[in-house]
Image (cartoon, rainbow, N blue to C red; front, side):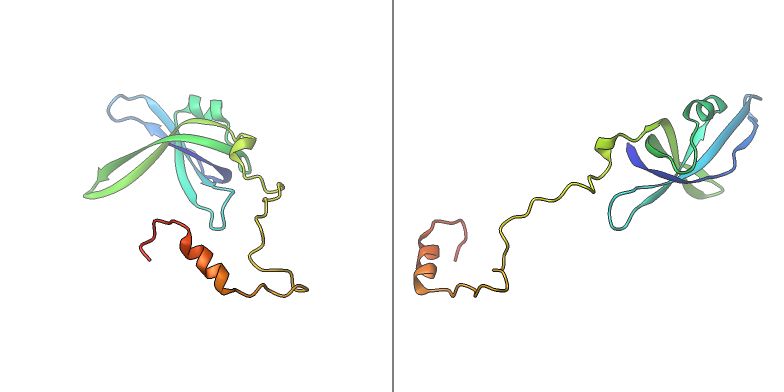
Length: 137
């Protein structure tokens, strides 16, 4: 899965030593917010491994596309989602909304204010009724 947006928060890195293997580990959580839409969504994801943290070099304010996997885990009888990034790349311009481009306008549904609206006639109704359509009425 992928999510494109701006990094709004980089949380403090965490680390420790694995009880199972005895190897050190490091991970960091990031909050990303999509930059398009009226109601932007946010997601917290983590990057695991010091080599990945160094390779991705994620900073607050960056526009990124995050590829991630979702997994759930149980701890003390409760379940938690784990969203782990496996690839992070700069957002491409094609993935961003084209805010500066004008939207093509269709024919206006209403006539301009200085022109009177056309009044429906019986001929208009008869022509519409003669056209074949899939509607049952």
